[in-house]
Length: 286
Image: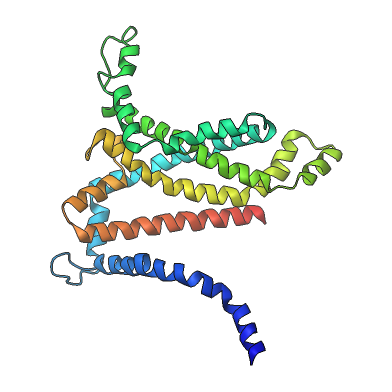
């Protein structure tokens, strides 16, 4: 009997260890999310069953479509820049270890700066009477209101890349550290060049790290709303009007049905993107 209990414990001890976290996730995420799913099909006031009416309203909403378009464009602009820059710096730091600790600290420094300080600096720099226009006053007589033009979108892109570069850099370095050095040495002995080693050894071994970084970077694009909101308020220039702006305005109006339907659509979109990325990377790995 004792041996059976010991064997049963060995088989199920993993479940025992994750049970506290599983209970917490269920109470504070899964159950509230099921409530959101229910509210997406019902009326905000009377809780009457509406079917797909809330989803139809959200999809026909011009502000929501503009926000989704801008968010997708923002991801398309930010992710390639961030991933390529952070990988390039990681490869350079891997080869030059002398000042790597100081450089990594410098890259991580933007993450500890309060969001309010970043927003204040951007307003000081890019407003119509800001520092950038002061520097360009000798070239351009008429000042440009950067945050109320299409340039605001690229200011937001720069903010995102600058803030997340160090975090991705550390993740790339951890992935590079996991590649055995003997593989590189064997490739050099066989006469492989630098580019052959990079594309045939480094890139395939970094695919799991690439997947993790891409997913985290995608999720982090939704956090840029804080900077956009503090710099330009609830209704910024339409080029930087993101999904979070829509949810913020719906929350202010207490339009629960729209918020619930929009959040479900948002979740489905992110999950499809992650599944598609995982499938593509699986095909490459095979």
